[in-house]
Length: 260
Image 1 (cartoon, rainbow, N blue to C red):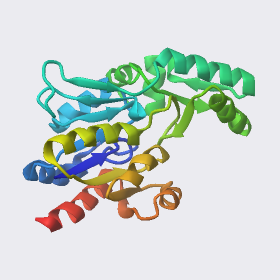
Image 2 (image 1 turned 180 degrees about the vertical axis):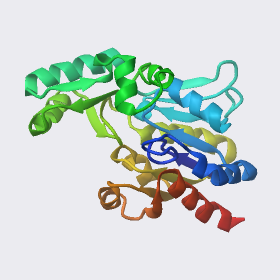
Image 3 (image 1 turned 45 degrees about the horizontal axis):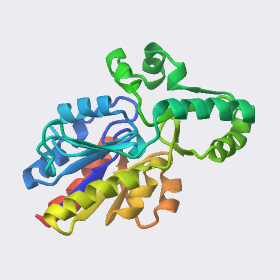
């Protein structure tokens, strides 16, 4: 069984416009072949549900940098309201740890907990309705560093409190011991228990994608300003010639269509 695991921002979605029309051909190919597409994102569950509905996707998904893996009803034996596998640390603990680390390190930060829906919409260049969904966080706090020269002491102070940081396309993120790879592994174990061995393709464009890209059979690095850093971390990854959904489309057609 083949499974595709994909980041959203800067990968399946355009980094600036959030458009995904350039990936329609490849999305249709996956549906035609019955290949599950697992979205694996830093976005909240509320945001991801909206994108899944727009793209007519039905398969499990990973949210908030591996904070939770969600199995919808009817998938992998889930019934009722489905299944949520929680791997992350509760959001209030993350916000408190970030503020304490900021004070200790002397590095000013601003996170989603500090911003209004209007401010999130402005920074992320998204409609207010979508920004409201982005603020419904449970296991991950995105933040910006206001004192770049104090970033290293900040990261050290966060680590000393038992928390981790990662970097997406727009923000730093503070999170617990979870990551995208651990959540993906939980879902793949469910697929393997029902379907036997699986072959995986993973697509991403950020440093927060490195862990799951290293674990898939065929990693795909979507071209961006960070691609060389990503290539150093995942040297066996296929690098697309185009960025965003156009690069996503290119890779899926190359890897899936040739096996028709």
